[in-house]
Length: 507
Image (cartoon, rainbow, N blue to C red):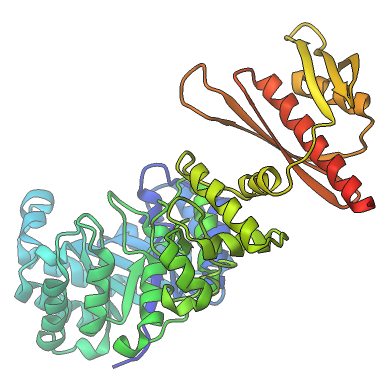
């Protein structure tokens, strides 16, 4: 038996059938090129008979891809098969993938045909596809709800007719791993000519078992897995390519099989699908979710900083993520907090660290996520407390869609009260330009962000700004129910910090 598992990606066919995942031709070509770079063995480019657009996309992909096989899907009839071949015939490695149901449920209610009639249709379809190419795959739709002996009879007949791959779909996600593994083993033992074909599986995730069922199939002799990036697809989706690939790589000692997947390209491929479809993966999604390599627990963070093996069974780099992230929050410990402070370029004494950590813990009880800017604010407030050279005394802004935004600002600068008026492209711009002129700063605004502290309509606005001048960077923060006032406070706060840092550097 081969020690290599072929990866058959159906993101562009089954994945695209999921609501909201429709792609245009150029987007499909981009995805196909990325799948080829990822090392996918077979790319199912689409369903050519479905529409002129789908036909054109499949044909263009067939003419573009050189290293992966390009498959076109076709129902078990002449028109579909002929159309599929027209779309893929220019491919370097074309494959026709034809299918028909074998379960009693589908035969009775959908096809309304006998088992004998379905078997003849399946054989005739494979023979017609074989007239175009030696690379023919046959799928027994709803295989997991089919009579096993009848399924084996159909598989035997289509292999005799020329099918080189026989696919066993769990079309409605009904199977459980032990049962599905037994089915694959039963097929190997009861299809006499099975050695002439590769056993493939196509599992849906209706019960959340698509990946588990696929893995059980591999353990019992399947050597092709049909899957999609991010697990997208009909209803609850398909088996996730990234999970299959990393399970086989991470636990190779158990499965003793390989794939051609370049795992370092998994995350970029996942991000491409998200960008094109607009459908994000959930944060706790295995391998590519935002939290897959994020650690907040203090115990986990401490162990990870000492030795990554303690809480990571694979490296983020192995799937194309630059590095793990330590998410600072109320569960974080002193070790992770110190590590982040040092990464930000600060060196604190033990007493200063304890003082900052106490403030950090208090803040993490109020905020869900603690960002680098929050930590820098803690350090500035607790460790490097600065005098306020500049204070905001008064601010009024006139703005609207028919007047030029104008800001009137009154400041106390080193005990001197000054007032000025300025204009800008908007209320914040007018305010900042006026303040900048009044305090005579040459600093550049690097970042401006606004957050709502609470969810109510009268919520306080929390503004963060980051300023830079001659290599020095300062963070400012301001809060107020008036977002323009909060913006002014944050800007002045950052200027005060910058002036303090400049004076300290000079001294």
